[in-house]
Amino acid sequence: MGGDVSPDAAVLGRLLRGRRSIRDFEPRAVPPALLRELLDEARHAPSWSNTQPYRLGIATGPLRDRLARELPRRYDEARRLQRAGALTRLRAVLTRRGLPDFDFDPRTQYPPELLAARRRCGFGLYARLGIAREDRAARERQMRRNYEFFGAPCAVFVFVHAALGPYAALDAGFFLQSLALAAHARGLGSCVQGALALFAGPLKREFAVPEGWKLLCGVALGWPSADPVNGYDPGRADVDALLLPASA
Image (cartoon, rainbow, N blue to C red; front, side):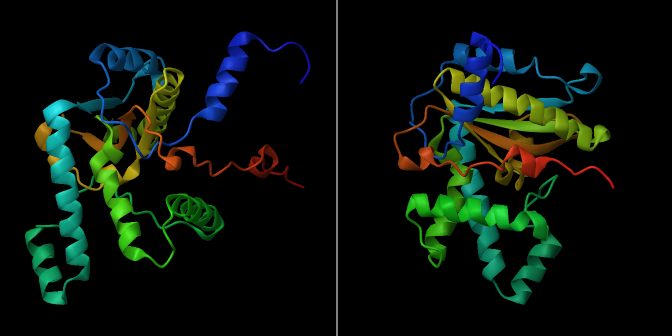
């Protein structure tokens, strides 16, 4: 690298390279003043015409605990329906009871050119957790932990304005990266969780969500535990793999 690297650039580089998705947290609370500080820094992320088309539902304390009971219950109910007979599933479709009520469906079908990377990431994570590929029960238990926020004492739910379509999600992404780096810089950890978008109903009962705003994702936030899963690094594609070749 040519020239001197400024202290700010060196710090930012370490933060970008060192951040991980944390999947096991200590139970100790994040002080409200510290949480406010993180949000105050993250709000400086760029957005479309400076509209900041996202709103946040913050769950700590009793509210967090209620959701950490309700969301796993909803997950269990949805899983039972998947295994139920045709008549039970039809009844659920007609009554909507037990079904996911997402605004955006996080159960994405990955295109072939992205599927290999997804599988490598998932297989590597389960290997770190000591979960064999054929152990479906253990994999389901791990999936269920999403809805308990992996034990994090704080969950942040991100709602975006539907009128801006993908650009609202893009702006929310800038905010989430800023929040993740601000947390990492202070020794906290985070995990952005698409899975938490699966059940919007409980969130809309707990937060006064305005008309036109939709649940995009959630974020587990807190102090990382010493669990080895938190050291998992799936790696990243090299820069050259991300560059499009020029047209002939």
